[in-house]
Length: 335
Ligand code: SD4
Image (cartoon, rainbow, N blue to C red; front, side, top):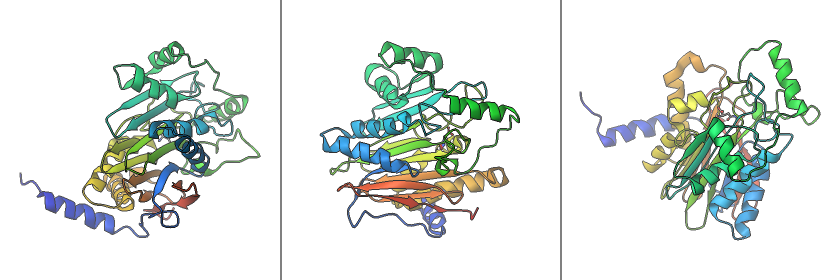
């Protein structure tokens, strides 16, 4: 078998990414490098909390955790932490991960009865010899570490689940994350996952991801979000990437690790995200029709880029002075 040369493989990667239209890295907020980025519109509030933590002297991990906790505590946000939509058995199960660029990682999957999954993930990182705890073991660990037991299923999310039971059709809806309806905060349209990347002036980087996963999933299902290399990856000297959307498609290609690898080989954050999205499309063909996957990446210089399968994925970029803007990612398909 002839192996492609290193140069040949990179050439293919670059050519593929270059084909994407409208793929551009967001260089900065008014010329300044980004400090923090998060997925979806609600990433703006999360970034504000994270940057405030940095300004107060917190570490990158402190900033990532603070940002994740904003989404987790938001009762109007039905797929992160409190009031997350349950699985098909009516149980709210949370997945989260946190990592820095020095090889420290912690994650939980299928955590129950605990609002701040990202903090439990950090506790796994800091207080166990392991990198991930799941299910009952994760929940027991959270209690042992003093995280309060909280009922995460609210009347709104329970009502949405009971409505879903009438058909029991599992069909993930694209861009449900941004279709928040203040007038109907229990609606099945109210679902989110937050992926976060933070960077300091020295170019060090950390990230996190927290979610209740796909609404009405099978009990025990774990998506991409808590899996290092799928929902999140950061690498010293290169940058970081995070994913959102249908996690099965992200896990299949080790998505975030793939984006970071492409940046390591010289692609911009936007081109790296586009390359990963194109790979999913070529691998899956018709099977991903109507499916959303979005990648968001930031390199060590503070350049930011994103790309997605379907239009509608947005992300929040915060510069070093604290200015934030929400940017719409370019997509492979028109809809
Ligand atoms: C999952 N990727 O569990 C998550 C869901 C998500 O915005 O990102 N929703 O598959």
